[in-house]
Figure (tube, rainbow, N blue to C red):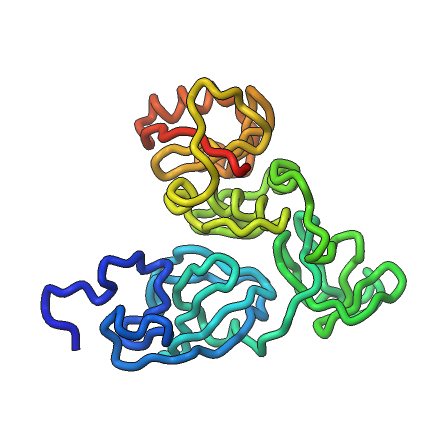
Length: 285
């Protein structure tokens, strides 16, 4: 039991602490008050997308895409408390969304794709996947990559060991995708989800929320430093990516989509709306 008034997380960010409130990963032994500690169970996401929630039946914090590797720390009433391997984000997912752990070989590079029942686009699909979903390719069969789930068009995939080089190009593939708070996929994505997806496409680990990105990702730049493609512009509660000296791309509630917008126009609009103070600009060197 935790004494009344004590912080069971010892000042830690709950989003990044593998502690369910009763069970914690063994690495936290002596650092948090837990009923028990565990090594966790490796697992992966086996549905196209699943909400990562702040509690069982709780609000969405982020989402995990098909193939995402996680460590399951605790289980409760059909829910699992997990930590995502890619960024360390923790939360609750429905147990049916998890399956046996498996090492992925490829990532979806197209905005979206389908897994087909057979090596034909005319014979029906198993599921739709978003850019950023990961798969284990067993072999190739004509224009398809063969996985245990079915057949995926080869042009929609790339090997994980062959990352792309320009995060802005990756981000721009999702132009027009609808805005969704806490979203991470083509069917709905938010500002920090877009930035994370852009860098993930280049094989670069990036935090999931904009405040975490501002705190720990990249190097802060002086205001007079010329803007470069790929620079991140931060406001309190928002992040965007420069695609040129004058234009940015971002998932935003103004357009309710991933869109291009002039940088100066965006700054003026956000300031006028009082949506959050401008914090500055960062660059991953």
